[in-house]
Image 1 (cartoon, one colour):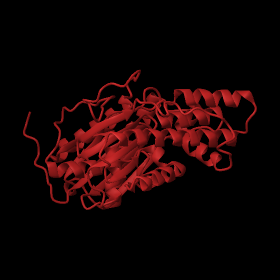
Image 2 (cartoon, rainbow, N blue to C red; image 1 turned 90 degrees about the vertical axis):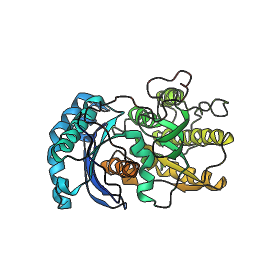
Image 3 (cartoon, rainbow, N blue to C red; image 1 turned 45 degrees about the horizontal axis):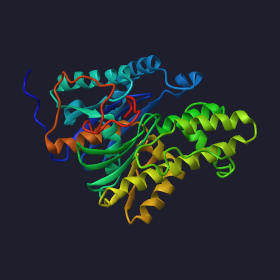
Image 4 (tube, one colour; image 1 turned 60 degrees about the vertical axis):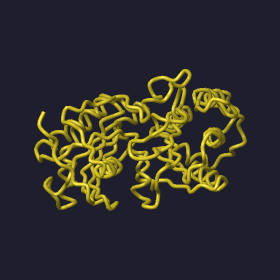
Length: 354
């Protein structure tokens, strides 16, 4: 294989591509935290009839939309490939068809322009996204990563340096939100709709479990909570808004309890950070901020636009890696699973999402 292209480390400009699930996204970000241009195409309409993401439909939509979106973002920025210093793309984890669409496109662009390719772990994109918006957020920090596919607590010690402290042993919190929305007939995507309905409900009206609360093991579990929501709904005894509010409060209580457990074995980091799609939930953000204040920690969360899947965070991860002179070969393979901490001990009962 030929020698990798040289890396510009001084205020680099990176083109980012994200296609790991149901958002096709492209962005150009500079190392000084300027988002020069970005576009996101949602697939909500395509997946709504099925109540969730259909991988084959998602991959097809990425393939149809990515090339026009790349052209549009370059036009928005009034730039060409010669004006960027590297091409970054999500290389996993995610729905493998969509990941491959984005990564293959990035490889083609990198080869055509003789620019470095940076294969980004989608979870690292989320993990570093708060630093794109907050220049004062330094390492280390305690990260709560909550999304549709993942629920983890990690100690972020630097770029590429992650120590997993907890993970879910069954379902992710975002999945639990989506399932609750489906039970209540709210449709897809479920998280924002559950949050909105919860605003008019009584969070103490429905008795729901807090799985693993008080447990000596560090991990999360939300499968039992989902089942309890279904039983509460099927009973016909509760208003939907009360079920939504009670579910959301149960989820918050679980997050706070598990974070409290994580801090017992740590010298308290200076910052608590939340990232991932569920980080857009304002009730969860407020509870986490109160927790951080209680423990004398700085609280940081990305703007709502950077919580859900987006290409700016992927481009920013590329910007973070460039000063470390890290790039990847053009034969880098897409990965459906890619843990941030591959050395972490497997959690009890945990499946592939751990």
